[in-house]
Image (tube, helix red, strand yellow):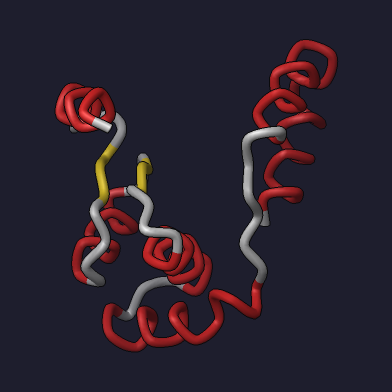
Length: 102
């Protein structure tokens, strides 16, 4: 999923962002489909969320991470699944406080 998303970004902003994307990727630890499938399945059943959201929520849950999104539905479903989640636009200041504590 990450490779697909980064490819889409590069296609839109190519020369300007390639350097930044390459730097970010150095700090990314990919999680495979097999590792997320069962948890994503359970999350989809318990929340009724979209499949792609179930995988993002599953990834946050399996890696004990915070989910940050601009998708209100995804945030709501993440919280239903017991994942700490923040809406980037509406909870930016609250999120900054949380991140500074880490």
